[in-house]
View 1 (tube, one colour):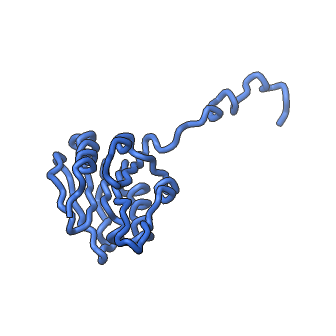
View 2: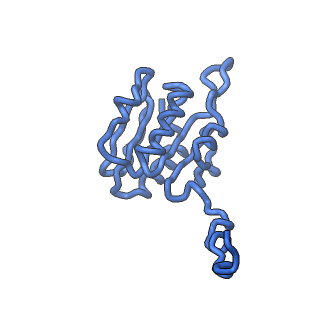
View 3: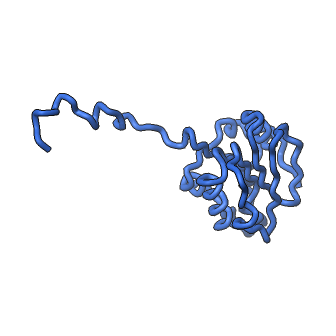
Amino acid sequence: MTLPDDVAALIGAMIQRVEDDPVLVIKPTELALPDYPARSSRTLELSPAFDQARDLAFERRYRLAVVIDAPQTVGHARTRRMLAYLRNVGAHGVLAAFSRAPLSEADSPDWSVADFLGLGFRRAEQATSLTSAYWVYRYNIYDYKITPDWLNSRYWANPEQWDQQRW
């Protein structure tokens, strides 16, 4: 099993962005990946016996965690818990690349865009040019929430009202 070229190139570009910072790649056991140029990277193999408590217990926070095709391997609920754990504790940024294709003709994909959005993920900017049937979504702690216009001192502190009204 291999990753489509355009998805592999997108993942490679995202890993290259973090330069020498630590990167975690979580992928199915049977998936062959190209060698990405990250000096301090770690690869975890996903299998049906993947244990989040044991396998994701690491001593440092990664700059980027890349998760590939997890719902097809470990299921919907475990993938959701893994992404939430990586988002909250394990990494500053998470990149998830999941196949949209069902496992068989009778199956429907058990992962959807609503799952990504519910976890605070956004579609990766480079994913708009993909021709493969893959969802590529990202989460970054530094830009996950857009600050609304009303959240500023002009609306919260009214210095012109000080000493004029008693609240």
